[in-house]
Length: 134
Image 1 (tube, helix red, strand yellow):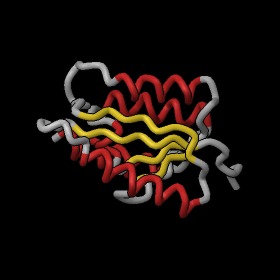
Image 2: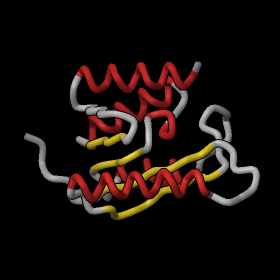
Image 3: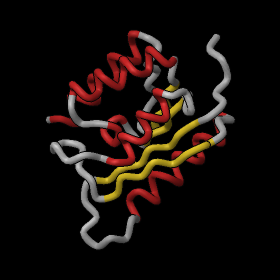
């Protein structure tokens, strides 16, 4: 049995927001915070990359901040709307899976259960990531 989540992060991202309304990330945030409440995970931080693609070489500042928070142990769980909101490149997904392994990070996805602590969950994440890349 894994330890209870003490500090959850919500990561939301949308590639294009031409009108600057942030409605897409707001919808993701509403769903993710509802999921955190359902699971009893306290949301400590929200990381939002609005109008930032995950497929280009452009830096996603909030994603980088979230990874740093995981590295230093501030965050022990992440909720995303779907794996393709987290990353769209297989190499970056593998780095995230490695980070999750090293820090025993829990991951929840509104788009379907992805338990990175299990071989099946990692396979599901990789399949979703490959589909998003395509």
